Image (cartoon, rainbow, N blue to C red; front, side, top):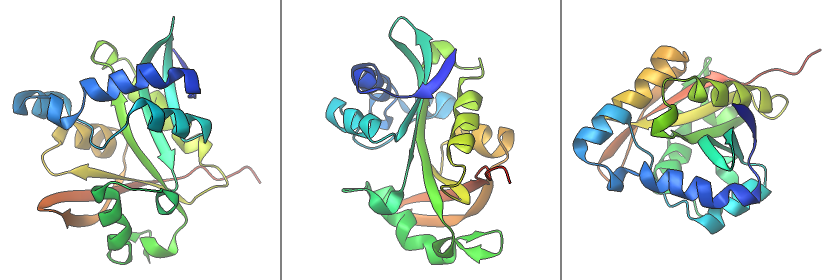
Length: 188
């Protein structure tokens, strides 16, 4: 497995991966067992994100994307989804290492999605590690949000990777928990 920045040519494979794991494409049982992603990530959006260096992929070879992770500056998003807008509004109440998140330079971590055939093989951990390394010199923290009820995402990001819960916020009747991890600090 090779972890790298996404290329524009990866957009169709990434769009298929998002579509197959989207909240609305899965049954309640599937969402509970495997987690889900949200938001609109079509080919053109993914191509632009790849061009801007905002996507990391796990490359399984032969054009197969085993997983992907978005890493972006939330405040710079042109048309952020509602959950990201809610996160941006909640920053003053979310506390990272003793400071309101609004006072911390941070990158939005996610969404992250792993192809079902590659789950349990270190893909999410490899993408997480690459995201932390890629954040060096760009941020103090990587911040994600996990919707209430997405227990698989909680198990991976909080229980396994050690991301710290910062607090909850609600958007359109849906509750999210913001979680964060330290960004890698550049070598002195």
